[in-house]
Length: 174
Image (cartoon, rainbow, N blue to C red; front, side, top):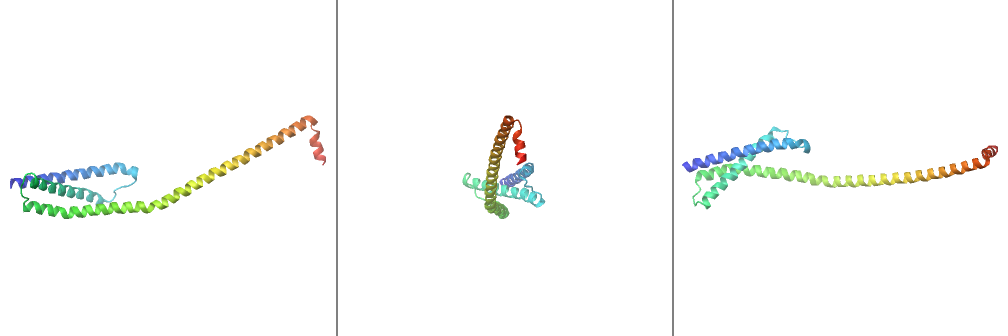
């Protein structure tokens, strides 16, 4: 009877410890959620995290302790211990299954977005390269036009200096 009470207190301690860890994880996720923009705004998510973590931790701890006492200390697992393991095991397995389904859904959503994201990155890269090519082409044309105008200006200035401005008058007459 004393061993069963110790076992019950031990499992209660583990459940409380799991709840504390769940609360700490919740607070940590709130701190990093501003960076990731993923918030647990739904109170049901907080309840599931706290309760689920506690149930799963209690189930794993009780089952591990029972297995340890059974294998190492050669004690038989009592019916009450098996009942507690069974009662916690059902919800714990459901919680684990739901968490894995949620993870699977999120990963599937990420994978579904990848082709669109890849095509957007390719089109952005293509547009950027095309824009850079056009800018270089216009810069080259501009430089050639500027060089042409500068040579034309130099020739006209040289002609003006040689003829003392009579070239412009001759052009005006024509």
